[in-house]
View 1 (tube, helix red, strand yellow):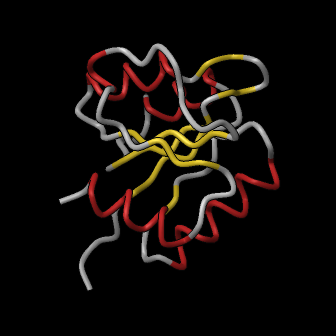
View 2 (cartoon, one colour):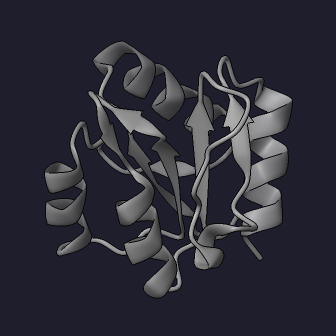
Length: 118
C-alpha cells in the first residue's frame, strides 16, 4: 500500500480528537497530532502539510472558518464538523466544503474524505 494521506484534525475536546484520530487510522489515513486551538493548528502547519483537514466548526467559542479559509488558500481540502445542521457565513472558497453533523458516522467521514482526496 502507498503512503497514507495525512489528515489534520482540529478539535478542542481531547476525547473527541483522540477518537477521531483512531477512526481515521481505522479508515486507512494517517492523522497528524490533533490541534486543540487555531494557534496549535497554525504551528503544526508550519511543520507539516496535510492532505486534508477536519475542523470542528466551534473551537471553545472561536470559529474555525478563518483557519479553513487559510487551508483552502494553501490548496488543502477542508471539511467541517459541527453539532448544528448548517454553518452560516462560509466564504466562497469554502462553499463546497463538506459539513458533517456530530456525531459523525464512519460512512459519512469516509465519504467526505474520499470526495476531498484524489
